[in-house]
Amino acid sequence: MPHPAGRDHVEYPLTAPYGTGMLDVGDGHRVYWEQYGDPAGEPVLLLHGGPGSGGMTGMRRHFDPAHHRVVSFDQRGCGRSTPSAADPAVSLATNTTHHLLADIERLRAHLGVPAWTVVGASWGTTLALAYAQRHPDRVTAMILVCVVTTTRREVEWVTRGVGERFFPEQWRRFRDGVPPGLRDGDLAAAYATLLADPDPAVRERAARDWCAWEDTHVSTHPAHRPDPRFTDPRFRMVFARLVTHYWSHAAWLEEDALLRNAHRLAGVPGVLIHGRLDLSSPLDVPWRLSRAWPGSELVVVDDAGHGGPGMPEAVNAAAARLTR
Image: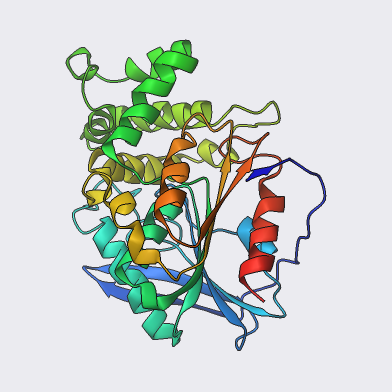
């Protein structure tokens, strides 16, 4: 259903965590986690985007700390989890969607959570869907914002199609950041190769070029501002390495698997929130998903892109409906 952008929405205070820790998830990885709100409250799991963004501070504002137990964690290789993907010597071989799904279950068991409302944004929606389809009995409800399923078709669009059609000048610079022989192929894979180059100057330029393109294809609203995190060389490297790694492998999921398996979510209520002006992640993805997922609702925010005005209100409304 359409949802007009508005100005007023509830924002709960950002309280200090009542618990933090580093969970050993195997393969030499330790995942940083935090808990906020009421330890006896309704459990909510936040899954950040990227991959590689880390944390979800802003999303916590939609959940009442007096009634919710909000869990957040930094996925493998990013944020405060170790080892960091910023280190070129750190292998990404044990950093895949399937490893992250196992990490979520380890964290749930470690914290003693029977089941939780799962909230994901952007890449976090792919992870949330994969987790819920694998463990539907562990999920009480879902809120998915800026919905993507990380298919090869979607990756091809966000690295090539959207640029050629809507941002030709910026996309040409992005494409020309890789060697001529690689420009007509998988650009995510080409950048992943550059980010593994032994020359630090090559790696740094690739990270800058990748993050500049990331800032471009989400910039469909006049209020958009460049992501300040991209000014941090360490964050740029983590983000670029992990995104190109996941995108070049289409998240290690069979093409359209999350859509085909949406029937597994029957009985799990969900709200999919998406901007009509989202060029980098077109609306057809959540639209098809909502039609295949019994009990889900698609909320289209008319004036929003990949985020933007109207999205916080929609998330707030979903949180109020699906949680107490």
